[in-house]
Length: 203
Image 1 (cartoon, rainbow, N blue to C red):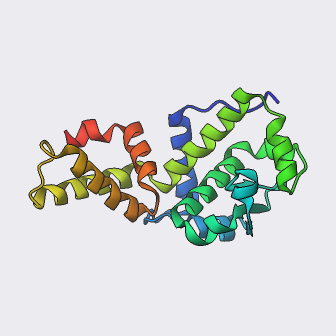
Image 2 (cartoon, one colour; image 1 turned 120 degrees about the horizontal axis):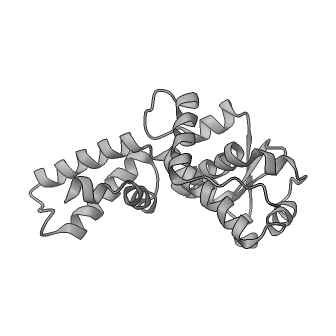
């Protein structure tokens, strides 16, 4: 397999922005990724008992792009991980549609065979792009900037010194921003790092 596209982070940002403009033009957060998957793409979301436990996979997409299979526990009990899994899989559908349609599978075993047909480098590129796209879709830059700025101001208004209590203050900001976007704090940390918001706006 040699036709995995090579996208830069800014390429992926552009594609994520185009995706949001087309499917969620209001820009309101949290991004309704489940509704986009089901009603805009008309993809079935199929919970699978023990998917993560048995196969170390939280989700995968069938080669006909009609079903996204998600670990049942993630689906019912880990809302932020569930949302990220959907965004990750829709990223593959947007970015790698041609790769999926060149293969035929609708089970975890077929998907594993698809993944195992790649080199380690190809698989790394595929997953990096899925993860990056998901973060950019669920946490758009302008909304992130606005939310981080608002919570920075609120933290300072509470009398918490950013300079003296940097780690504590930043943990509070990350926690509140993550709740607004309905993602994990780790996703916010990665997006902040990529957009260099700590350097630009917090120090």
